[in-house]
Length: 237
Image 1 (cartoon, rainbow, N blue to C red):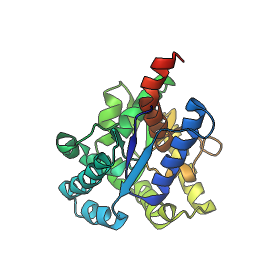
Image 2: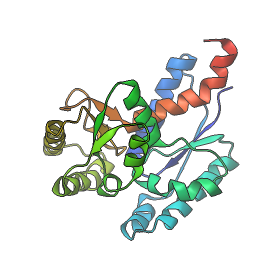
Image 3: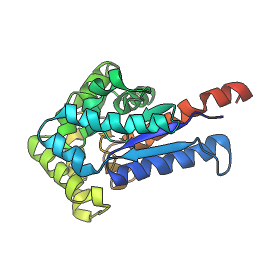
Image 4: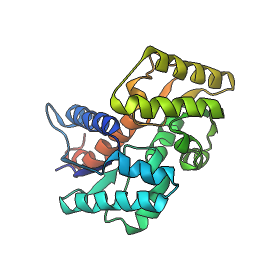
């Protein structure tokens, strides 16, 4: 049997996209209507944001560990978190975690190397973009990165929290992302990290000035690959 995936969720839209992707990828790997067992737990986004806004990453870690323990208790065998920003707390979480985690930025970095990209544009919440989550993962794989300018970070942050987390998608928001990504292309970037789980709701390869690295779907695909590894090893596929 595939391993049981536990999702430590944070925002609803991103977690829903991750879960849906696991189900679709599972069917591709395992056959019609099949996917690994999945359990998900989330505290309200408001509780996470109260900690993030006061720079309380220990508080974020406590919330993540609370979810991790609940998921371990219901049988999950490893964990993923489809939220880039709160990965800042993962170094505090992992030593106390009852289960191992896949790291979203390392998954993205691995795919960037596979696709031959060298210099990545970062997008996401301002907390994510200003953090070491992606710089650490990318530089460890020999990749360069460029952050948006401060005003661009604020504009993207507003769109994420005022619109995308509520499932609202507007032409003005897409135009903002396209301007920022287009400018980062002019700085020599050859791909863009969609480093917020809601950004893939609005930015795709079809409308982006740069090829995209969709962190939400890449994490989901990596989870299915990890969950099904022992199955494919047994049947030889």
